[in-house]
Length: 165
Ligand SMILES: [Zn+2]
Ligand SMILES: [Zn+2]
Image (tube, rainbow, N blue to C red; front, side, top):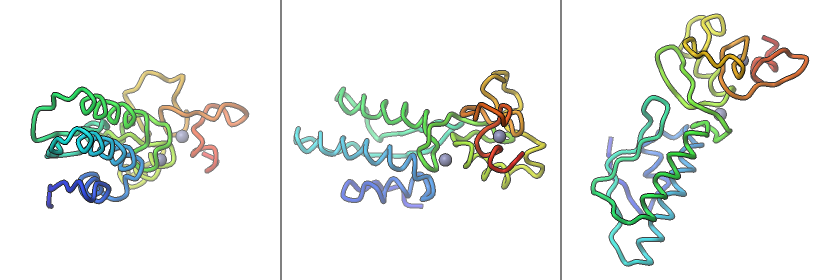
């Protein structure tokens, strides 16, 4: 894969690093680098080179090829990482990192189900976030951590409610 990052095609470059279906995070990182590009244009500085943008343990990591001294650029990057920490990487819905088997990913309940069906042979019996202890915010059917549909459904995530699990 070509790791080149082209400031004339920021979105396309971000897609190459994060994979095309991660639309939620692609949007966050694209906006971040558009801000950085505008900042560099205004200040007549060269664009910082990007070596890698990826997910690690459910968190967004952005690695640049150089040290950044501009506080605006630093805070733009930190803000993108914070936003990604609260957003499904697939769709941008509010979410938090989930443990799917031995794999961590920040996914909303819908996309966590999709990933779990692919990765766990016995989902939902196998369950998500098996080591988690914050049961108050955990779906009683699938183990999803985060959004719970309170009410008659009895403490389940919206995806389990809609599937009748
Ligand atoms: Zn999602
Ligand atoms: Zn659930």
